[in-house]
Length: 355
Image (cartoon, rainbow, N blue to C red; front, side, top):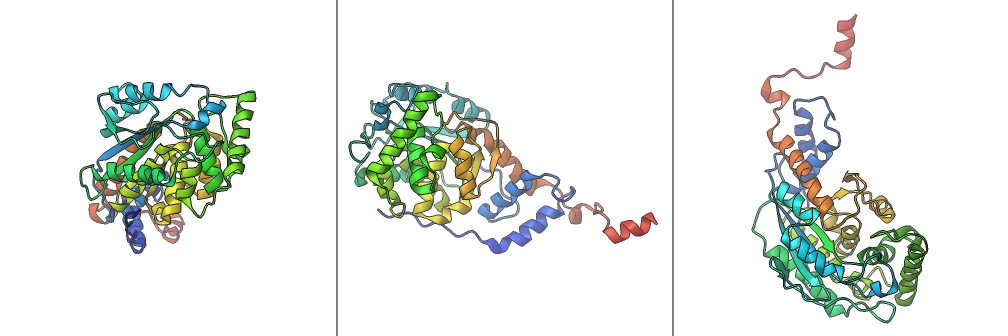
């Protein structure tokens, strides 16, 4: 398949944008991490005064054959039930999208049961993936089709010079799939990558670690072939999220990564095009233990750290107002040079006055 071409961020603008940031009417660095976010978003937007960005959340849904090995506290039947809840506006991410002016779309890309509910976008590629201990989760053509579903969904969104595209997911068993991808593409061990997900503990958690290790041993996935990895061990919604990330970045939009599951999808997309890194904003540090290890590997800093582990895009939706605030600070704050406000005294002058 043909992937979209990602633009290059003009890093030569960093000095000028930082000078604008430092000229805002505040002590240097007084807005802390909000300043770092403002600079990052300004570089993506290509202006030191980025507009108030429209925001979109795409929640992709899929089921996983790995669930038949007891890796989740919930049965696969919960996936379509939660898809219906998302589409009806009753899920946490639905509430946060309404609150925060985010256009929310729920997309069936791999749910085992038909999700012909009002408000669900139909882009189903597979009716659940296969058992990865018996063979590949998908064939390569299906993995490519999942990636294309994400690209197509972004292509259907309105055109904007700059916007925020958040990605989330729904699918019982997908924390095990995320662990598989983080091992295969991020270099984590099963013990480091596997977490409680929906709440498995004790022997159930140990079983989850064993299953992940067995799948990796069965397939020996090659990180140099990310689509092959996705086909062998991945899930439909992971491919769609990866495609959506690449599609949004190709438009020059900032990509807001929701927790651990979306982070694993970002690994797929980064392997396909490393330039994506310049467009990623990591919304929060998931409570899943593998999330912190993944972010450390990637050198990523989260916007929020609230112990979230829900998924759906809820953490990304929660971060959007902060990202908009970072843009507003860059765009609307007065500058010392323009407002006639005195800047801080030079250290030498301050010392001389004190004497």
